Length: 385
Image (tube, rainbow, N blue to C red; front, side):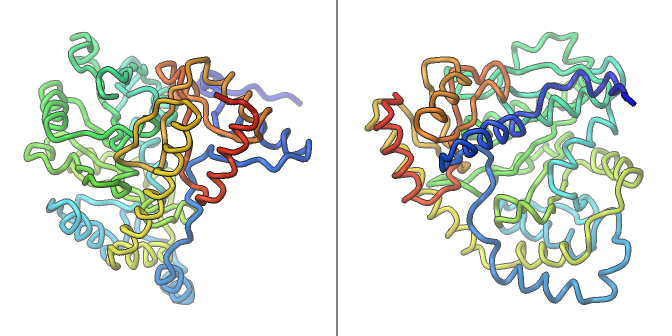
C-alpha cells in the first residue's frame, strides 16, 4: 500500500543533516575514515556530577511517575537562579517551563499563536526549525537575510509594513548559528522595540548563550522592556554537553510561555523527572564547567582559524559559538562535496541553512586539536583551497 504524505510535510525541504549523514556513509563504505565537522554535537562528556545525580535520580520511585507539564518547581527555580547569576536578570519561576530540548519548544511555539496566513519572521541562514515549524503551523515564513556587510544582523527597516502588521513571531538566534555573529545591547533594544510596537512575539533561541571567548553573550531579557514581548529558549545541550539528554527551557513573557505550555499539555507529558534532577545539578553547579568547555573550544578555534589562514582562506575568529563560518568563494555544496571526496573531511554547506548561506561552509569545533591538525593536513595535501 502507498500512503501519501500530508501537504504540510510535502512542503518541507529535506533535512540538511540527514543528507550529510548519507554523504558521510557513502564515503565510509569506500574505506575512508571521515573527519566530521558537520553536526554541532559536543564531543566533550557530560560533567561527572550531573551523571552521578542522574544515577541517583532514576532510582527514586517518585521520579518514575508522570512529570509536571511545566516542569518541577525545583528545575524552574534553578533556571531562574541561573539567569540571575549569569545574566543579572530576575525571572519569576512561574514564567519558566521545562522543554524536551529547546528544539521542541521552538517547533511548538507557532502552533500556539500562528493562524493560516500569518507571517513568521526568521533569519536565514539559520536553524531549519524556524522555517519548518512555521509551515507545519500553516503560517507564511518571511526571510530576514543575514549578510556579512550588516554584521550578520537582520535589517529591520527592510520589513514591509504590511508584513510586520501580519507577523505573529520573530525568530532570532544570538550568538548565531551558523554565522557565529553576536548581538550587542543596541541591537537588542532595536529589535525588542520593533516587536513591541508591532505586537510580535520575539522568540530568541539562546542555545549558545554560554559559549563565548573574551565576550559575554547577552540575554535578550536583559533589556528593560523585554518582558513585553520576549520568550527566550535555553538549552543544556551545548552549555553542559547534554545533547542526548533532551532538556531545555523557555522563559520570559507570561502570555507567550502560557501559550507554549498549552500546546505541550496536548502533545507531550513533560520531561522525565530524573533528567530534570540532572539538569538542576548542572544549572546549580560550579560555573567552572562552562569555563573549561570554553577553554577547550577556544584552543580548537585558534588552531582551525590559524590553519585555514595558512591554507589561504580569509576567516575571522568567532567571538562565540563552537563554529567557524568560512567564506569559500564557490557554491557551498560543491565545496563540501569536493572536500569530502578529496580529503575525507565533512563540513556543512551554508546553503543548507538558507539561500543567504550560499558561498559559506560551517565547521563545528567538536573535534580535538589533533583531529583538526589531521584535517588541515588532508586539505593541504588534496589542494583544497
